[in-house]
Length: 294
Ligand SMILES: [Zn+2]
Image 1: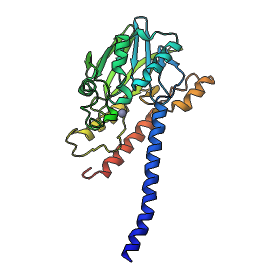
Image 2 (image 1 turned 60 degrees about the vertical axis):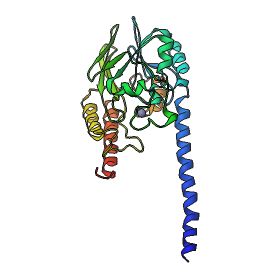
Image 3 (image 1 turned 45 degrees about the horizontal axis):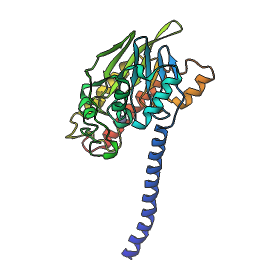
Image 4 (image 1 turned 90 degrees about the vertical axis):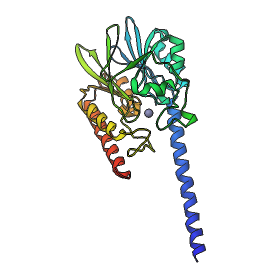
């Protein structure tokens, strides 16, 4: 009897595991396709442009003295970024400064290539510098996953919380929003549109990735406190234009067609920003409560 019962529960269990695995693999493959799928480049406001793919966000801030690029993505994305910049009438080789949202391969694997092609100065938040310069090997969570490693890239300027990056008339402020990575950075700047000055927030990432240990993490002690800090910082930032490291954070795919249809202010979304931050904070608290000792 016992044997039969075991058998029947197994026959049920295996297809379920198989289904779950298939779902995970399909979901992951979908995300990856999305990452290298081209997306039209467009002006967000003032001198700020979207030059990313469908799934990975890149921003170009243009000035008469050259340009600032945020994120380098995968190495496979570099030709896409270049084509996007050129489609707007700017020169890729005029990129003078390269910044990132955080030291994960989907935002920084192409940095070495972009530095070589443009000679741009690479400026990274200090706590992410060891990860960037080791090509991902010193990452607390993904350091042993060969699929997430990339060419080690020399950092030219180490940033600290609150530091400004200036080029021509552009000024960006680096806000340390740690947890997702130790040096995860949320960028803010001001843009002028139709005579008004507005606040831009480019969220680094408030997400707790699958498998992140929030309690008793010997490789990242204080990770939970860092997330707490991040939510405090994000809630304190004035935001008109809500942007982020992935288009999915701010509904790029829904908003872009509206922009094309004539709604020039669709990316001004302070309520969407507040809702997003609140939703991510809730997800963090839920995950923390679920973990032993959390
Ligand atoms: Zn990430």
